[in-house]
Each structure stands twice: as structure tokens, then as C-alpha cells.
Length: 83
Image 1 (cartoon, rainbow, N blue to C red):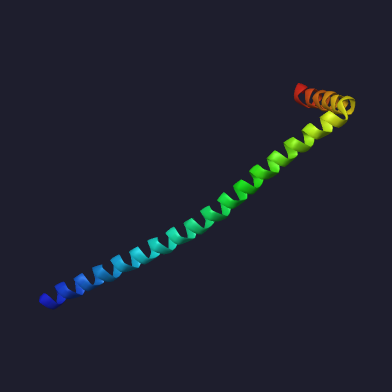
Image 2: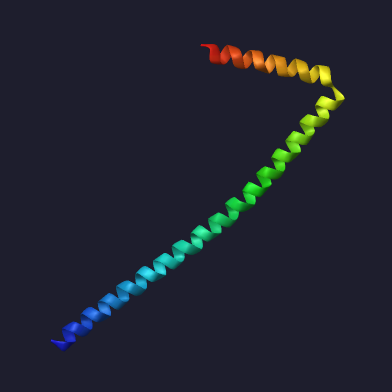
């Protein structure tokens, strides 16, 4: 009877260790993905700032063309959403 109890305890210990190992691997993988996404998020934020600054410079340099583009874009958006 004691042997059966020991076998059960050993089985439970092995299963517990296996579960811990799996959770550790999952946590490491999730951490790696989080770091990648965080880097990409920072990169996209930098790109957004660059685009906004480029648009501002374009409007300063060519205000009439920028206004024309804005009117045309607004008209197209109106035509698309009207239907």
C-alpha cells in the first residue's frame, strides 16, 4: 500500500513539474512577444510623428495645394459615405 502511495505522489510531482515547466515556457514566449510588440509600437509612434511633421511642413510650404487636397479628400469621403 505504501508503494502505491509513493507512486501516486511521484506521478503528481512529475505532473506538477511538467505543468510548471510549460507555464514557464509560455511566460517566456509571451514576454518575448511583448518586447517585440513594444518595440514596434514605439517605432509606429515615431512614424506617426514623422508623418504629422511632414504634413505640417507641406501645408506651410504649399498651403493652396494642401487646401485643394483636403477639399478633394473631403468630397471623396462624402461621396463614399453618402451611399
